[in-house]
Image (cartoon, rainbow, N blue to C red):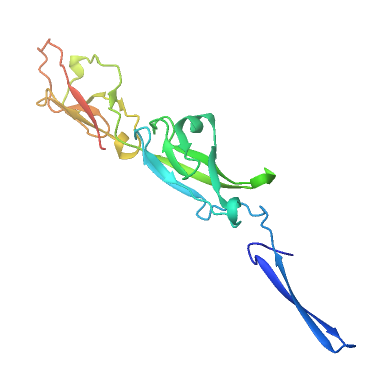
Length: 231
């Protein structure tokens, strides 16, 4: 079987012996192998794994893919395209010539933290108009940034009988949420008022009395609680 990518031409020597006239004739035959589009583009570094920060700007480079084609001449020019979900199509684009993948919009980790893309490499088919294709998987991971603020949850008012206000008792438990992940979403609580009477446990948000409350007091306590993430 002839393979253009291995040998492009063959040269044969033909010798004819004339036993009657005792002469020898020689001729050379050169056979050129014509290239055919018979090799698929190959992504040698597949699968690709790229990481990019959430909130990265439109046009930011996510990564570069590259495919080679063992054919020669015009058949080894590869063009690139993406196959993915509608959300992926609206988030990423690929340069058909260079294989550079860029953002079409800013990604949000809290909306989607990773994307599975398929990149297609298609060679130049020439006159046959029958291109060959290679595919590769591209995994894009969105890196979480500390872009969300902790939110304290209601209720914001607690009613406690004065007769029960003794040192060491738990009065309330503050609760907050943070949409970020990891340390960016871990919350530490703080107390910003009435520090002589109350304290707050930093990780649970539980508020306890430091000392007993004077039974003659009629005014309510106003506690200012802070919630801070650890990002």
